[in-house]
Structure formats: C-alpha cells, structure tokens
Length: 326
Image 1: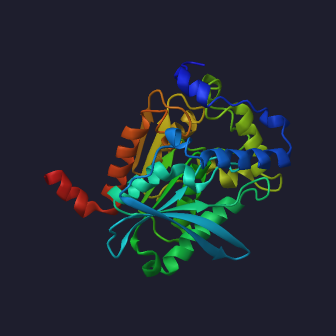
Image 2 (image 1 turned 180 degrees about the horizontal axis):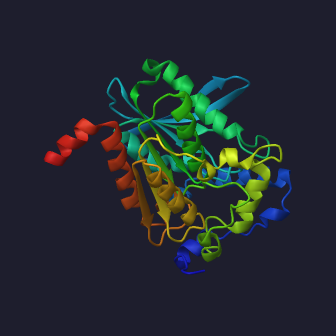
C-alpha cells in the first residue's frame, strides 16, 4: 500500500466481512443491514446532511416487469423546466441505495439548479447485470417521455454515477450515443470501468488494497455475483469498448487512495485519446466513494464544487458565462 488513509477513516470504514465466503442470502442480509445503518440519524455524521434549499421526494416508476424507487431532489423554488441529472449510487451492484448520495445530489439540485433523480436500480445477486443498466436507461427514456410532468428540460440532460453507478452512467452514455436521447455531460466519480478478466490488472488495486472503501475481496465478490457466466463482461466494461468517440463531455473524479483509481484515470485517458472532452480530477487522500462520505473525507467538498461548476457549464452555459463575468 503506497499510502494509508487517515486513522479515523480506517477505523470507521473498516470492513470486517469475508466477502468471498458469503452466500447469496448473506450478501442480501448484509445489504439490508447496511441500508438500516445508513438511514439512521447517526450515519448523517458520515454521509452528510442534505442541503436545506432542496426538497427530496420519493417516487416510483413503472417499467416493463418491474417498479423502481426514485429519489428526486429539486430546489425549493424551482423554475418550470430545469436540467435533468440522472444519478446512480455505488455499491458494486450488490449494495447501496439512492439516499446515500443525498448530500451531493441535494446540493447539485439547489445550486445548479437542476432536478436530480437518483435511481433505485435492481441489485445482484437477485438481478445481475445488465439489469441495473437497463433500469437506468429505461428510467431516462420514461422521464423524457413526459418532461413537463418531471419539470425537466430534455435539451439539458446529464448522467452522474459513483463506483458501480459510474459504470451505469458510462454505459448509458455509450448507449445514448447510438440510440439517443442526446446527453450533454457525464460525471463519473471513483468509477469502476472494467468488469472483465483484466479487472485486477491495475496498479492501484494492489497499491491501495489495504485502504477502506473497496477491498479486493469485496470487488471480486461483486463481480462474481453481478456478472453472470452467460454475459460477455466486455459488454458492461466501458474501458474495453473499442471506440469512445462521440460521447458527451466527461468529468472523471478519482481518489488517490482508492483501489479503483487507475480504472478512472485510464478511462479518462481513453476518452481523450478518442477525441472526447474529458477532464480527470484526482483528489489526494481520498478513498473509494468519498463523495458519499463528506463527514470523513474533506476532499468531498472541493470535489462537489468542481462537479457543480462542470454541470453548470454544460447544462446552464449562459448562466455560467454570466457568473464568470461578474
């Protein structure tokens, strides 16, 4: 391990589970326990309080064969039509829930301003890939079928994802490039971009193996449960796509203490090599999924400001230009 996370982070985020020894039922039980902990008041010390200038509502959306939960963040005094940011939480496709990103999503909603919709996509082992990606893409299409009902502008749409959610956001951008709808920005934070056999062939996985947030054991378990044998892992690995040209502008945020650091860095490099306007922002002393832990990782705040500025420049360019002139 090239550098250690701060002691408090290592203590509070220590992973005591032997992930590779867990049965499917035990993984589901661990997920349910983690969600109960995250939804407690005490957890807000780590995950952060929502922005008071935003309101949060729970909605459901009916898609063929399933109903999904959505967590919708809006400014308290919204305009009739605002940009849409479709957000995807992390958790390796086996854990996580939309509420874990309230701190970031509510601030983007209030300060962009925008309608930020966090998708409660289906999880493995019950629903392996590509189900989470289908949930995300189908949700995007359904919202844009009736933009007036959602109060969104279909000409200003972005995707945002953390960790495995970054995989979903990147794959939606790739699909939208071929089939629409047009996207105007993608923000990938600590993204996992390679779920193929080369997943472990990145130096940061070994270098940061002892840091909290994403252990190699947990990552291997996530891959085993979320990538079924019948699925070509290249089809869910943005890094392994042959051509990335024509994708929307990207901001890739990584943490230098994150096992997934190199996957984000190399994906940003590949985007730029294929002509995509892509910015890479590595944050020192930041562990995996640090934007969902602002109470523990100070880097979450400057990263949030950078994401906000990037989205404003792509979704509300006229207003951003006016701010720059003042």
